Structures are given as structure tokens and as C-alpha cells.
Length: 338
Image (cartoon, rainbow, N blue to C red; front, side, top):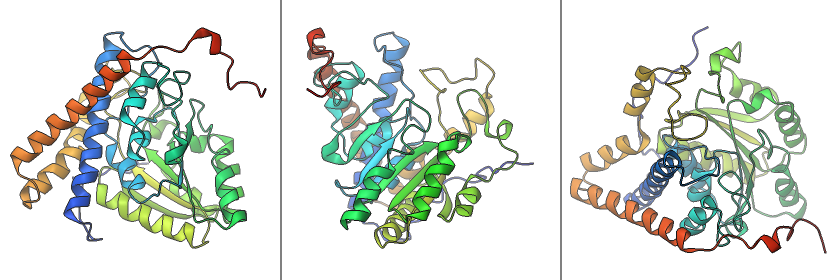
């Protein structure tokens, strides 16, 4: 069958009346993610960064759109492609780079690297390198929120290959039966590690299957900040109101390969025309063109914001490089209870 494509540029319709100031703030966050990923990709290519990095470039609107409607006390669980989620939820940029360089001042104290990021003060309870590794774990805080009558939700980000894991159906079923305040966000970038979506599924129906488990399910353009924000706002409101688990599929595309700085064209996984098409759908480029056209920002202001984002990222990297690596004598700290 013909798998669903996105045949148009992001519509970027501000139907919820988001203020210009808020839009610019979210645009800045997207820029921070993009420049962070660009710099990390460069350092990986130079073999200056050794922790395996699964980069988020091209998907920025998904993380920022979802996290824009969350509180610090709401929980976010992430996967191996975790950089965008960490930064969108408010994780500290310097601590992020310190973790990328495995320094003691990193958000996981240099013990986790790229795929294991956490910041409990922002509700970031951890990311996992294991495919579907947080699907069960993420239900714990949601279950607590329901039992304790707390007004918090859990958001579980995962990729389009996770529904092929058994724990996906178990997690959805458990959440639905118990009407837990959890939002599953499937970032469907059309590829698993080495196989496109159409080679792995008979039907392009991930969201439909989630609905069959009783979840309110929606598919949105993952490169459209406004569409993701609206879907996330509705899902969070329903979950907070006791209406049970929600499912959002964001249709998006990763510009780089499964891991590292290459684009997978060299190994024949995808072609240059496809990548070029999706780059025309860049969530940042199209948003800034809208902001300039509508007079929210001038072209000069956009240039300055790019420069500021690049400067912040470079300063964060310099901070990380100035920090010490963990002392080997503390290797077993936090592993065993005293």
C-alpha cells in the first residue's frame, strides 16, 4: 500500500492564539536544539565525542510542541534520541554538554552519556538506550499521580519501531484499564535503525492500533509547531481531567542516520531526493519565514537569534570541556544501596 506522506509544507496555523512572545520563546528553544545537534554532529565526525549520539536534527517541533504545554512537575521519559526532549523540557544546556563529554558536572554526573539524560527538577526522570525501555517505567509516576490525586501527567516519547515491541501493547493496555494520566508521543520519522516503515508494517496504522486499545489517538504534522502544541494541549487537558491515556503520532523526519553524523544515504537506506524534500519541510526554517512575513521578527532579528543560539551552545561546550571527568573511585556510587 501507499504509506502516508506529508504532501505540503507545515501549515503553521496559530489557531490557539499563542502570543508572539511565546512563539518566539519556543522558536529560540528549537534553535538551541538545532545548534546543539549541529555541533555534536561535527564533534562526532572529529572523534572528539565518543558517547554514541542519536541526533534529533529535523524533529525539533515535536519535542518543543509537546513540552510547551507541560509543567516542571509533569514527567517526561525519553529514548536513545533524547537530546531534543531534554532541552525542550528545560534541561540545563551546560549540564547537557557536560554529559555528552562524560564530565562529573553532567546531568547524569558523566555516567550516562548521550542516551541517559535526567533532570528530576524538570520532571526528566531518565532516558533509555533500550528500545521501548521506558514504556513500563513511565507508567509508575502516572499511577502515583492517580493514586495520590496529583495533577501531574507522564509523557512517554518513543519512535515508530516501538509498537513492534511487546511491551508497547502491554503498556497501552495497562494504562487504558487504569485510566492513567499518560501521553504517548510516537515520533514517527519513517525509519527504524536500518529499515523504513513500509518494510516493517503491512499498514501505516500505528495510531489506529493505539485507538483500538482505548486511547484517544491523533496524528499530526510533527514539523508544525502549532499543530503539535494544539494536540499536546488537548491530550494533556484530557489526561489531567481523568480521561485516561492519550496517544499522539507526530509525522516527522530525522535528517541524520540512526546514530552518528552521517545521513544513511551512503549505505543506501534512503536517497538524496527524499532528504532534500524533507529539508524543505524544516520546522525551523518554515517557522522563521512565517514570523518574518507576519512582522513578528525582522530578518535581522532572526540572524541575531541564530548567532545567540550558536554562542550559547559554544559556551556550554567550553564549560563542559573545562570540567573534570568522574573520579574512578566513585564508579560504584549510586549502584548499590549502602
